[in-house]
View 1 (tube, rainbow over the protein chains, first blue to last red):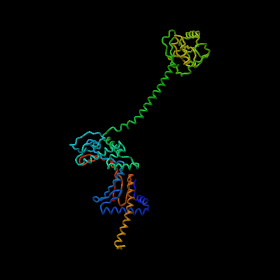
View 2: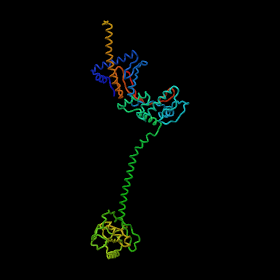
View 3: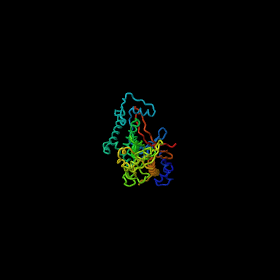
View 4: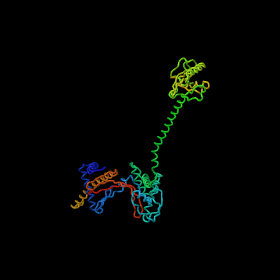
Length: 362
Length: 86
C-alpha cells in the first residue's frame, strides 16, 4: 500500500475539511516549517511520529517509541538472546560463514536449546544488562504460566511495556509475548536440529494406515466369499471312489461336471423326483446319483435291472470319458436339486453310499 | 489604557498571526502524523513531497557480536525507514 503525494493531499483535505488546494498549501507549509527548523536548530520533532536531525549533512529520522512499537507489533516483546558460543558456531557453520572467534577463557557448556541465556554472571560492565534480560525472560515465562496474576509481581517498567502490549491486544492484534518466546525457542530448535516436527510428520501416516487397514478388511471379506464358493463347488462334485469291487472305475469327467448353484434344500415329494419308485420319464436337467460307469452295454443293462428290482429310479446313458472311451453311466434317483440328491445318498446302502457322484442329466 | 506603539502593535499582530499559523500548522501536523503512522502500521508507504518517504522494512533475526565478545541473537523486527528526498 503506497500513498502518493496526490493521495496524501486528498486524505488530508478530507481530514481537515478543506479543499485540496488548501490542503496542499498546508502540507507544503508544514514541510517548509520542518526544513527551516532543521536548518536553524538541526533537529525537528514531530510529536507522535519521530525526530529529524542532521548528521554529517544528511537528514536522519528517528521514529518515536510508540509508532516504532506499533509497527513492530508482530515481534514486540522479543528480546535479544545471548547465545552460547557452541550454538553460535553451529548457526554460523550452517550459514556457511566462518566461525567467529571465541574467547578461550570462557568455559563451553552444553545447555538445553530453550535455555538460550547463559546463567553465568556476565562480564564486568554488562552484568546489570544481563540480569535485566534474565529477569525479563523469567518474568515473562512466569506470566505465561500463571496468566494475569503475574502482572502484579512484575517490575513497573515491565508493567508499562505490558500495558502497551495489552492496549494493542485490545485492538485485535495477537499477544506477542508468549508467542514470540515460543518463536525464539522454535528458531533455536530449528537451528540446532531438534525433532520438533515429529508430531506434524506423523499426521500424514494416519490416512495411509487407514487405507491399509481397509485393504486388509476387503481382502479378508472377499477371501471369505471365495472360500464359500469353493465349498459349494466341492459339494456338487464327488471324487473318484476307491476300490469298487465289481464295476469299472467311476470317474466324474471333468467336462461333464459343472458348478451347480445351491437350490432349495427341502426335498420335494413328487412322483417324478425321488430316489425310489418307477421312473416314468427321464427329466432332463435333473440330478441323479451315478453308481456305475461300465463300458460293456450288457453288463450295464444287467445292473440297471438289478437296481430297478430293488425299487430305485434308474437312468442309463452313454458318456464319453476324457480319453475318448465310451462308457455307460447308471444313475439312481432323479432330483430337482443337488441337496436333495445329497440327502438321498445317505439312504443308499453300502457300497453305494461311499462310491457315487451326483451329476446332472443332460 | 496604555497606548501601544506602532512597533509593539505590529509585533503583537505578527506574533498572533504566527500563533495562528503555528496552530494551523500543528493541526495539520497532527493530521499528517496520524495519517503517516496509520499507514505505517499497515506496513504501507507514504511519500511527502519536499521531505521524503516513510516505509516499513523487515529485518530478519541476526547474530550480533558485542564489544565484550558476547554473541546476541537479535530477534526479527519491522522498522520505520525514512528516505529523504534528494
